[in-house]
Image (cartoon, rainbow, N blue to C red; front, side):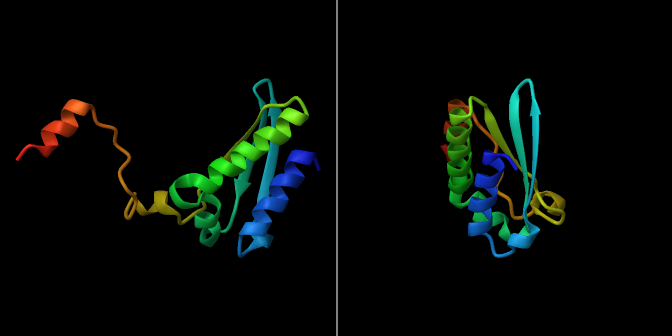
Length: 109
C-alpha cells in the first residue's frame, strides 16, 4: 500500500463510525494520482464536514503527502447508494449561482 493510501486510510478510519466499510481505490495516470473513497452512508457527514471543510482539509493534507513524493494527488468521495442524489435532491440545498443583477432583482419588493 502506498504512503498516500495509508495516510488516507488512517485519517478516514479515525473519523468514521464504520471503519470496516471504508474502501480506498488508488489509480495513477498522466494527470497524477486519484484516490477514490467509499464510506458507509451514515459516515458521509463526518467525512464531508460542515460546509465541506473536513473534505477540504483531507484533500489539502493528501496534496502535501503527494508533494513529498513528487505526485499530484486528488481525492474523489463517492456518494453511497441511497444518498442525497438518490433522493432526487430532497433536503439538499440548491447550489445555483446568480448574477449580482438577478440577486438584486430578487430583493426588490
